[in-house]
Each structure stands twice: as structure tokens, then as C-alpha cells.
Image 1 (spheres, rainbow, N blue to C red):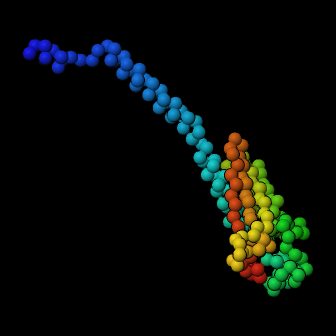
Image 2: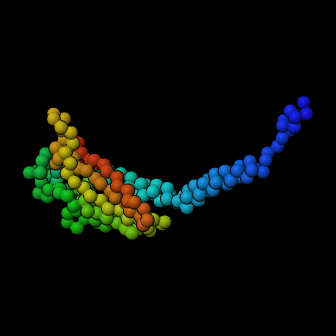
Length: 188
């Protein structure tokens, strides 16, 4: 009986204790390394979210513009049923000195082709937005047919809008969207 109670009361040996400390130490070192990596990169998600917010804002601004056969300044724009009815056909890029900021302003989706801003982001009134000095944005618009067969939309009636936003030290974000000519004669 004496031998049995001695083994039941037995504690941890020095070797077992050292092995336990080494294992816990290695595990804690791994956990601290992971925390260090996460902490060092904690600002990155904020920058990425801001890049996406800039791209989404610019996309919404562009998609809300008219997509007409004629330049909206053309008298035939409200009634044109094709480019042959226009004195000034709406093409890719701005016409007649139009800009995003000053009169005459962009007045059609396709006017934004080739537009870029930065470093620094400005609102539509050309006011610099505080805190966005390190960001840049550029826009590319291309003709893009959609679908196939009976329900296809011709390339002349659909535009692919690509917005790329960059910030130093980050991979650029590209946001793509489409705008179709669903109401070619509607002007705001």
C-alpha cells in the first residue's frame, strides 16, 4: 500500500517541466509573431477600403450621366434615333473643352474616357478632399457588347467603365461597371 500511495502523490519531474516550458515558449513565440504581423499591417485595410470608396463614388457619378447618340449640347440630342441625326456625335472622350470641374462640364458617360486625377482626390466642384492626398484615380471607357443571340446588346449601345485607384505601397484597385443605352433620348 505504501508503494501505491507514493506513486499517486508523485509530482512533475524536472525534465517534464522543462519540456512543457519549451513547448509553451515556442507556441507563444508563434502567437506573438502573428500579432506583430497583424499589427504592422493594420492600416492596410483602411487604405484599401478608402480606395474602393473612391472608385465606387466615381463609378456612381459616371453611371448617372446620360448616354445619348448626340452630345447633349446638340439640339438633336432629345430626338435622335441614331448617330446620323446628330450634328455632334457623342464619341469616347470629352468634346469642346469639357472637363469634370469647369464649364463646360462633362455631360455624357463617354466624356470621362481618359479622365484622371491625383495625386489627391477632388470632388466634382474641384475641391480637394482632406486626407486623400496620396490617392490617384483614372477612368477608361470602352465599347462593350453584352450577351449573345436575340438578347444581345450591340457594342455601340453598351460601355464598359473601368476605374483604377492607386495609393503608394498598395496594389491598385480596379472597379468595372457597365452603362447601356436604355433610354437614348432622355436628358436630365
